Structures are given as structure tokens and as C-alpha cells.
Amino acid sequence: MERIGIEACYLPSQLRDFIKGFKTEVYEEGEIGIDLKIPLIDDAFIKILTQQLRKNREKYLAHLSIEKIVQVLGEASLRWLNKDYPLRKLALKTIPVITGFSPEVVEASIDAEMESSLKEDMWRALSLEIGNPLYLDDYQYSPQLKGYSKAFGPELIVSIFSENIPALPHLLFMRSALVKSACLGKVARGEPTFAPLYLKTIEEIDPEMAQCMAVLYWQGGEEEIEMALFGQADAVVLFGGVETCRSLLKKIPRRVKTLVHGHRLGFGVIGRKRMSHQEIERLAEAVALDCSMFDQQACLAPHVYYLEEGGEVSPKEFCQAIAVAMEKLNQKMPRGRISSGEASTIHQLRAAYEFRELRGEEVLVLASSPKTDWTVIYEKDPGVFAPSPLNRFIRIYGVGDILQIPSALKPIGPFLQNAAIAIGDEREKEFIRILGELGVARITSPGKMSIPSMMWHHDGISPLASLLRWCDVEKKDEI
Image 1: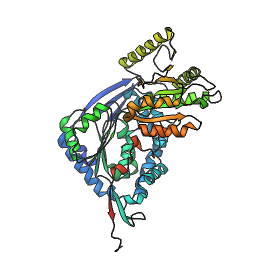
Image 2 (image 1 turned 180 degrees about the vertical axis):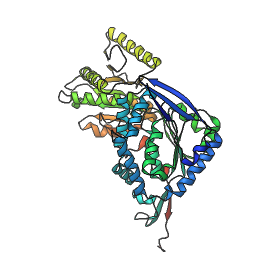
Image 3 (image 1 turned 60 degrees about the vertical axis):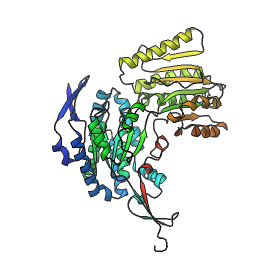
Image 4 (image 1 turned 90 degrees about the horizontal axis):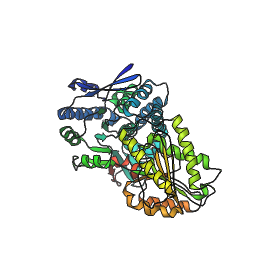
């Protein structure tokens, strides 16, 4: 068996000697064994670490040009897109063993995240959110103000990461660096390895920038550690479920700027004009990809796809095509392992729908057998939105008219995030307007749900601009 040692942390070099020690957790699957070293820390160490991150930032990152920052981050993305890059290979060995995601899903996640994090993406995101990226370097003339302005990022950003998308943590380190902030991230127990590996890449390219970043792991609910952490922060970015975020928000001082990326729901809509023999195979493959990426764990994934009746292809026929596409994709990108409880939930839901199908209801169950790798359930639109148990379980609702859909979405408006629509007639513009009013943060095409660009207003906010404060100089008569 190949044994791999890896640390669930990344620290500035000055802090290594302050670690009291490590405990080791062991993961094994097949021919690979992982010895995961978790640092033993306390609230005193948090205070030392945050102070050092601030010092390192003031010494280097705060004075680094935005052009240089983008160059470093862009190079990091390119390295992770290189299939021969050693740290990528290490991630593809270790993350599947710890998380249960298949290597193919982890690889697809890394590619999706890094392909949208190249230099040109960062420049576009900066331009979209703050206009002139040079506002981050020094005072710049503002034609609208007819004066000068400068943007300032927080000195220290703290982030709590979730475990549902393996490569997602890099995004917060990128955003922090772009606003010239030091960053300390806490990785999730379920996926503690990608973030430290990503910071090793930053270290390879620019060691001094890496000294402004850190990753730690500790058991959730460590009150003294978390109170010390949030007390030292200038801004906090939370990723997680409703209860996790609610609990953490109680611990964050009111003076601290806080951004929350909590539980969100996605869905898709295909109109009757697109329900055609010509498009069925391509669209079915697109729907299958939306439902399979990240094993449907991400907030970007759809729980429900609405198919409008009255097209050349009926919703039931379309479901058959989706099932074929789900199986093909599962062969290429297998679903990861799931717990016995998750499998039991899927079996119970399948059985409930199969019973309804046997009773003659307009229900169709299409599923992998004998395993729970994927499930496609069709029924007439029940008028309510039922969340999926995830793990590639998609509900397909047949609807007489797409304008019936918004009434089912309105009660969950605060949780709406991502929608894929393919309507193809004059109603699409009006439908998009309605979805925006309901609370949807991003509207895209089927097959694109899992790959938002850096220009996306994440959960409806400007993730870079929201971290900034501004200073304006209006001494017009003297300048």
C-alpha cells in the first residue's frame, strides 16, 4: 500500500515552531493510505498567527501592484490546469480517499474552478466590480467624482470553508489577494487538503505573498478558538449550511464585515420549443452534466428540472434520454461513495415513487441498478419545490406552461441561486425578469450550471467590491 503524509494546514514560515504538535487521522481506500496531520492549536496560537499575517501583509502584499498579484494568481491557475503538475497529482490521489468523491469528479472540479480563474478572468472581474483596478494601487482620477479615489481591502479576512466542492477554497484566497488582504481559512473536516496544496503553489511562485495566507483545521464548535479568530478579523466570509452559518454569526463581532454564502437551491427549465427531436440528445447530456458535477453537492446543482409539455418530445421521452446520458456520464465520471444513510434515503424515495407508478399515477422512475449511482424521477408538476437528496437524484416535473413555475419558487426565494433555462421563444425575456425578481442570482444555459465565471455576482453580491472601503478626494479647487 502506498502511504501519503499530508498536513491539514499551511502556515507562514515564522509560525511553524509555535505549533504544539500534530494528531494524525488515517484514511485508507484500495492501495492508498493517507496520514492526515492536524495541528494542535489554541486561542493563543490564533492571536499570534493573525498578528503575523497582518505584519506580513503590511510588509509586502499591501504594497504589491495589482498587476503583479493577478500575474501570480493566474500562474497558479495555469499550474493546476497542467495534468503533470505534481501538486495536482497529489490532490487527485488524496482528496478522493478522504472525501469519497471519485478521482474523475475531483479532476472535473479542479478544471472547472481553475479555468474560470485565469488572468483575463480576474481583470474582467475587477473591472466589472470596481471600474478601474488601479484604484487598488493608489489614488486615481475619477471622472464621475471629478476628484480622486482609492479602494482599501481589509487587513485580515477570515473564511470558513465548506466541503462540497473540492477546489472551491482557492477562490477566497484569490479574492483576498486581489483586494490586498491577508487571509486565514478554516478547512472543512470533509475536505481539508486542497487549500494547503493551493497555497504551496502560491509559495512556489511568490513566497512572500504566500506568507500572507494561512490554512488551519480544528473541530467545529471550539468556542475559544473561534471567538479569538473572529475577534481578530476585519472581515469574515462564511460558506456552509443554514445552521452552521447561523451559529457562527452569533460569534462574530458586529464591527466585522461579514459575507455569508449559505445553503442555496438550483433548478432548470426547458420550454416546449426546445423539446425537439433535433435537440433532445444534446440537451439531455447538458441536464445530466448539471445533475452530476460535484455529485450534485454544490449549491450550483439543480434539484428540479421543469420540462414544458406541448413540444415535439414529451417530458417522459426526454427523461428517457436524460437517463441514458446519466449512465454514460457515470461511466466516464463515476459518482463517489456515499454513506449508508444517504443510500437508504435514495432507496426509500425510489420505492415511494415506484409505488405511485404501480398505482397508475403519472410517474416514471428511471434509475441505475442495483446501485444508487443516479436516479431520474418524472411526475406532473406538484406545484411545490421538493429538494433532492442529492448524489445525482434529479426530479423532473412536467409543466403545462412555464409561467406556472414561479408560484412554486416564491416560497423559497431567499434560497434561490442558480437557474438553467432554455425556452427559445419570446417568453424567455419575461421569464428571466420574473426569476430575477424572485431572487435567482445567476441564470445560465443547461450544462453550464456548475461553471460560473469570476464575473458572477456570487449569491447576488459583488464579492470583491463588498470587501472594500473607499476614500474619495474632492478638493476640486486645489487639484
